[in-house]
Length: 85
Image 1 (spheres, rainbow, N blue to C red):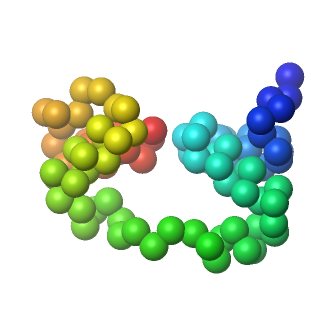
Image 2: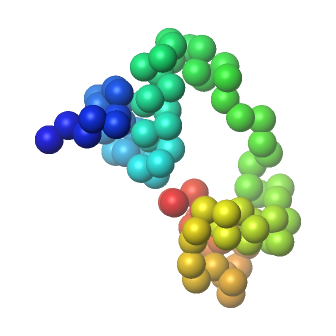
């Protein structure tokens, strides 16, 4: 059953199959409905890879996203948890 809040269902399903989170897949699918995929790709974020973030910054990001159980994770496991969100 299609979700009325998702503007491009096919792209959403493809992004989910690639392992993107529901939130990110919906955000990208809805952005491409407003403009072309090329424009959306050029407009993407400029943040560094999580590998360059400090553990404190990673924990703050996990808190912002509402994740739980991250306080005792190693940096690599914390990065995985953020990417799998």
